[in-house]
Image (cartoon, rainbow, N blue to C red; front, side, top):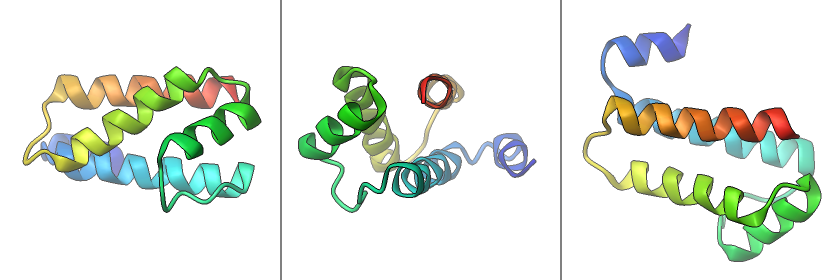
Length: 92
């Protein structure tokens, strides 16, 4: 519901930031991995604990950082990020 509200308002950047925060909370809670530094070591540790390829995790991290740095985010960029996150959640 909250996601739909942001999407309807076209506040895509803010929604992407909230999606990233949810992802980070999920990782901290489920895998006990700190998310303060989402660097290469973080990617490797998460890949090891989840069994998901490090490249896939790297793509999620890259997209999260990229979207947070943009002044605006398109619907397509947001949908791609959402698809990446959904695939991650399905695999763990």
